[in-house]
Each structure stands twice: as C-alpha cells, then as structure tokens.
Amino acid sequence: MCEKCGRHIEEGEYKCESCREKRISIDFSRSCVYYDDISSSIVKKFKYSNRRDMGLFISAIMYEKMLTEAEYADIDFITYIPFSYFKRHNRYYNHSALLAENISELSGIPLCRDIISQRLISIPQAKLSDSMRIKRPQMFKRGKNKIKAGKILLIDDVLTTGRTISDASSAIKKFNEVQKVCALTFAC
Ligand SMILES: [Zn+2]
Image 1 (cartoon, rainbow, N blue to C red):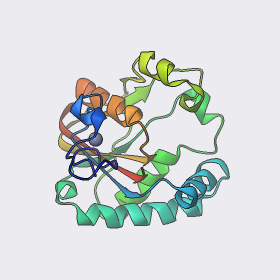
Image 2 (tube, rainbow, N blue to C red):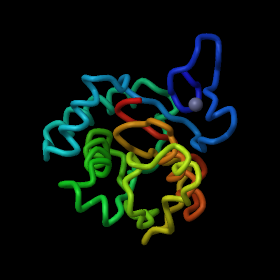
Image 3 (cartoon, helix red, strand yellow):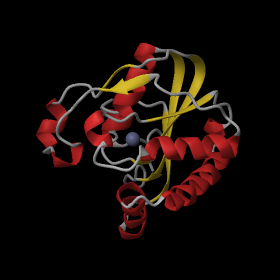
Image 4 (cartoon, rainbow, N blue to C red):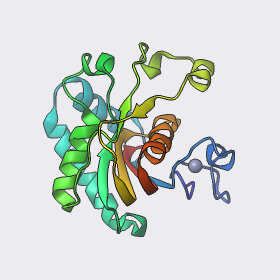
C-alpha cells in the first residue's frame, strides 16, 4: 500500500507512481475497502438510487477506519468534495457531503462547508479519456467561506486516479489557511 495515498502497489515499494512523481498532492489518504464488484455496487446504489441508508452504512465503516489511523487523531474540521450545478442535477444529493455529515456526527468533529467550490465542467469525469483528464483545468475555485485550520479531513466515496482529491486538496490550501489536508475514502 502506498504510504501516502493508500492505493495498492507492488510489495517492497513505499509510494505509488503518482505520489513519487508528485501528481497527487494530498498529505495523507486511506480507504476502507478495495474497489471491487461488491463495494462498487454499494457505492452505485448510494449515489444513483437515492439510497441514503447505504450512506449510513458506508459512513459507519469510514468512521471505524478513521479510529485506526493516528494521522486522523487531530483533525480540526471535516469537509467534502463540492458539486457543480451540472452534476448535482444528475443525482439526488451530494453523496460526498452526506458521508461527511454522517462522519462529523459520529466523530463530533465540526463540518465546514463551501471552503472551495467546483468549476462548471460540462462533461462528467468518467466520460473523459485519460489524456483529456490530464489536460483538463483545475476542478475547483474559491468557496464562499475561508477557514484557518491545522488539519482538515476531506471525505469522498472512491479514490481512483486521485485527481479529484488532489485538486481539492490543492484548492483548499490555496484559498484557505490550512496546514494539512488528509483524505478518507470508502474504496480505492
Ligand atoms: Zn500514492
């Protein structure tokens, strides 16, 4: 496992290629489960079938994971990946926000909102080819709020390329006074 982003790598390695080449800018990230047939069907039900109960299930597992890592012990605020107008209208809710709200409630760590906002990008990321993903502009801009914190926990459901979390982390640091951004996702 990559010591920085938590993705699977060859035995004997410490960091994945993306982290070695500094393509992922996150201070620390961990996931609870592998992104396989089972976890992806749970995530899809939660995201696209209006199954908020699945969100409670996922959040509970994420909170358990949070308790096992020392890096998550001194978090000041919890936040989530904001949604663009376009994406929001394809879904029932911002799933990342819902998970963050649940984890905030379970942990007692306050939630902070709108510290970054998403730029309007008209094509969902899943439909972009790899080369377009590399070329596309930064996903996030300044949010309505600005905070000062030592460590922020950024919540999302799945970490794949790490690009979304990396962009969000950079934007959080750019537009706020935040020392460290750690991420926690359900699957990777
Ligand atoms: Zn990595």
